[in-house]
Structure formats: structure tokens, C-alpha cells
Length: 71
Image (cartoon, rainbow, N blue to C red; front, side, top):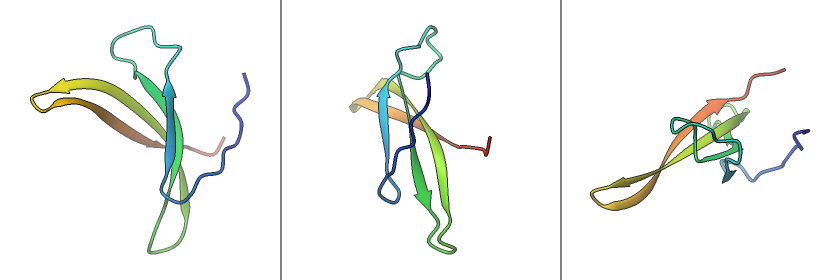
């Protein structure tokens, strides 16, 4: 499967259900996005992972952001 290049508004991203999830520790949602540095204007491409959780105040998503490295 090839990864298509997506264009985002600054400081946004998108998550999709993780259809390849095989273990509980793997994220429920995966996606990508970007962050624009206000100081220098550089844009970092990010991986986004999300896990569904239930807490004292109800359901929530725990998110993890990782920088995409040049390949």
C-alpha cells in the first residue's frame, strides 16, 4: 500500500481507525498531521496515534505525536 501525500491547514491532522491493530498496546487510531513553528516558520510532519480510554470524567482519547523522519 502506498502512502498518499496529504495537505493540511497549519497545526492540524487527521486520525483513522487502526485496521491493523493486533494487540491491546497498539493504538486504536492512527494518522498524520503537521505543526508550524511560530518562531521560525518551519513545518514538522507528524505521526499521530490515539488510544480510547475511560476515566472518571468519561470517555477520552490519549494522543501521542511523533516526528516523521526523512526517508
